[in-house]
Image (cartoon, rainbow, N blue to C red; front, top):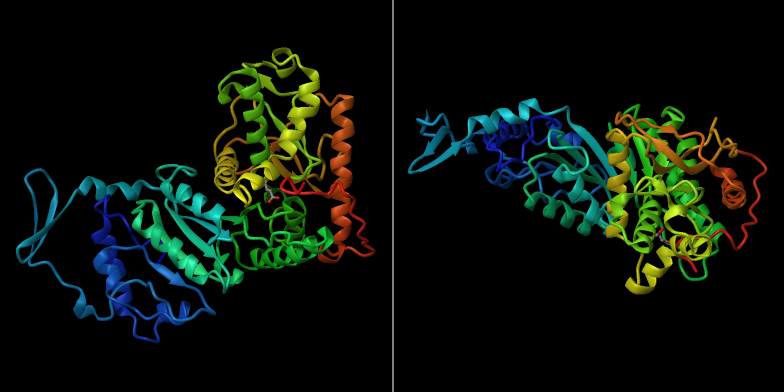
Length: 458
Ligand code: LMR
């Protein structure tokens, strides 16, 4: 079914595929498989005639409002005549109206890769509102990678989620083959190849950090269980919802079927922020800054590493001679950039977060440039830097572009770095202790210090 649904007006392949879609749907009686798979769906004629993507609303929802296709076979209008034009295109005529298809374009999707299913939680939120369009456009996975988007919202965000889906439809992305909306992670994560866990409860006024860890931890424990039960066995999981390192750890611990290496927490945003500051200070363009590592937690203890970073291939410390600036202003600016943005916007960063999620994914599906690396918070088991073995900790990684990665060994860890990396490690160990009840460990206790703050908290 997934492969059969097509959206491409511009590709010209849609009629073929959408008539498949129409046939499939028209075969369905009210109790047929389409209906039983997606409860409450009433079929309408609009989708087939408008060539829109199939939007399915998963279980536990009110009756759908946007669906695929036609009710009766008799509603599929057969063309009065079909012929090939002198320049090799196929024409189908309905009375005076003819639709012409470029047969080369019809062939194109046949060379595409197998459908890739990307599940996104917090899909009605602001970060997703930037991110989904990047994924659907092909920017992340390339121009020959068809995408299915499975969007997880909440009861409260139902309308907004449908709004996002409508905008995705209206964008006519040829690579976007399927959209599924739902509020049940066991439905939405089914067969996911990627899970982008963006939704999380923000810390409210007066809320203790331990409470935030507990509330969000429960969400991520549940989502880990759902991924374990229904996602593809090699699903790549990127946790964005804060506190993302510990949420990723909780998610991983609740998904024993999925390789631990597949879990990431987002620190690419911090890497991008660090590159930006270094480029501005050195007066160079961003892409001349490389080898930037963020060590540790996505919090104010994170360590943006200027010791191993390079500008124009030279150590940053040879280009920016102001050591005090590097150790103090640069470090603190990156650590607290989230808070500075909240002051300006009145809400957390969204567009740059979405960009960094796309960057983080691209880093895993594109070979890393020789000699360079990227930052991602990954499972520490067996890591070459002596970090505690059971954390999700940001480190330098490189990838062959196959979705997997290795931790880059042998970075120079001087005393300045070592002291700060230790502090971030201790913070993550404290966070882990607070969520012991969610990761199957006994005797947890929670005594978070003031150091444990998200970048957005001052
Ligand atoms: C950010 O780094 O911008 C966010 O993680 C800030 C926050 O606290 O939500």
